[in-house]
Length: 171
Image (cartoon, rainbow, N blue to C red; front, top):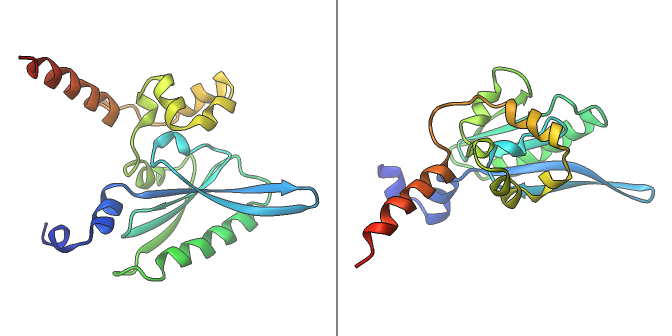
């Protein structure tokens, strides 16, 4: 608590809402370039055909999807370079780890992300519009790979709070 009371707003925000980045190759003619895009910190960003980096401020994880085949080593090296840039000014220096999809170590990443897989399809698509390009079967498979717990997602909880508070505000 003492740390949070003396930390900057951006530091506290980063602790509460970690940053998630996705790496991909973009091809333009003969030229291929690496793209690093920031994504909402949600479970459905962990697609098996992606490489993502989760920066929690104290830890940085490189997560490699199980279906990454094309240029896997190059993506991993680029991810490591990006992680070094993220960690360069961190204090304390964040720990770093490379995690693989479909392993028990996934939980290190899952626990930091909002469980979007528990929310409605409309909400999933509004938060991650790229899911519109995924087939219904692939989306079902993506949703099923996450551990289903009885706790509500943040969005489900927030909606329930709105329903409780809204009627009591009427005069």
